[in-house]
Length: 68
Image (cartoon, rainbow, N blue to C red; front, side):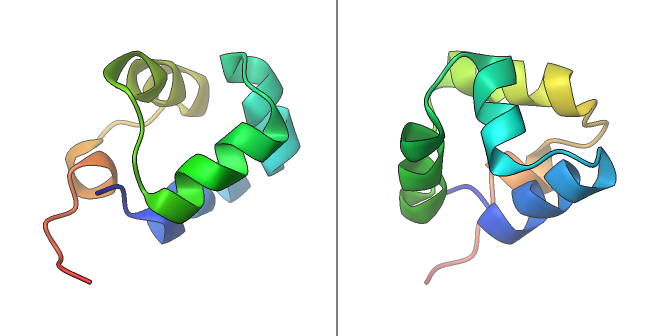
């Protein structure tokens, strides 16, 4: 599961809105919102997010081991 709060913090660090990020990775803002809510992204989407958001340490964001 993706740590959505950490991913959203990465958006803010780059001064991007969810809509900005969605456009940059080639998906609709609705799809991004749904994926954030479910906490599940495909590997190619994760790669794009890491690149666009310049994430140096992706493990705590994309491979969150916490059980909810």
